[in-house]
Length: 188
Image 1 (tube, helix red, strand yellow):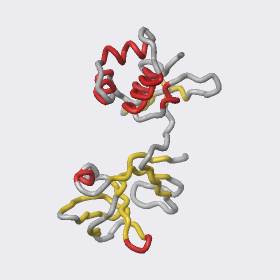
Image 2 (cartoon, helix red, strand yellow; image 1 turned 120 degrees about the vertical axis):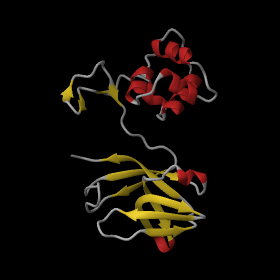
Image 3 (cartoon, helix red, strand yellow; image 1 turned 90 degrees about the horizontal axis):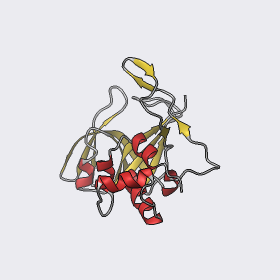
């Protein structure tokens, strides 16, 4: 079986140590390296463990004859576009459990009409702290929502700064869940 473990790991900008540490149970970077290079046989169990550690589907780690890869042609930095240091592939976004989407119908803040914002649901409590200074979708009563930058939280209250200019801070109390923006899908 031909795997794309190394390509996906590099596309995710992760080291062998990063992947090894995220495996459940954790393993060694040497083991991940052997699985990448084919010096150790990749079982279905290993494929699933590595896929979870990388945050992709196991099918993304296998080279299939009927699937076209998206090769990285250039890297864009402060000094312009240039050839990448080594060949690589881009991993297309995949839906995972707990994702919700926000569609943008009119430009506001950094978002444009037609954008999709993929958000990962968080449960109340400590998980909300992971979203500090990030855009957050929070449900309100009667099927309404608030979307804004989380600027503070205290005793069951979330303080959100709306994206529009001259809008006042909003406070949501006892939110049953919130979803932090994790991926922007934009057509050019």
